[in-house]
Image (cartoon, rainbow, N blue to C red; front, side, top):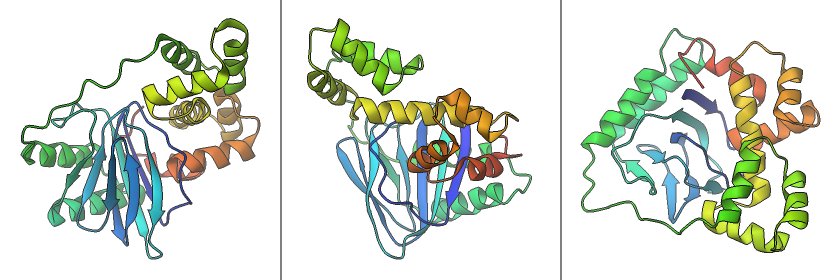
Length: 249
């Protein structure tokens, strides 16, 4: 998986969500504060932040002058602990990261894998000390079952109906189990999963209306709103930025 995103400004605070791939992010100006797993991290000029796959994260706050948010999504194995955020505090890497992503987004014939290789190489040089990934809490089987339903295309409504009719626990209890296991609510996980299905379809030549329908959105308005809340870009912007960059799903 390899994809890029660049936004001129932050679009409000995100819902907590996670991805099945890693995310590297940087800002050109100002400061963006994020909660990611057990960490609170500040994106600022001169630093690139890497959020590993599966770590729930969301925007907490942004300074008034925060602008130029650039993100690379990729699935290459990392040399860092798999459940913790890492920060590359190197001005040179930040400058190259932003320059390359802006070149990709502007339609230049530049392979996004160059940006990925820059991040992976910088992480390999970063001292890790004795930090090791924690084992994490044992995932309750009911939380695993709900996640599997959503991953198979189930909507939040269908999940809660299944909980009410087939599971021995209340919806509220199931939601607590799910959040404890995956860091997000059932509804937020389902929203992100639907946006991810749409993101994959945007790498095809399907019309946006068809993408919205196939991904399970009620209409294009909901599609645009929910996609923007997860990726900080409209579906059309995401498609244009990833055209001709070597991006893949």
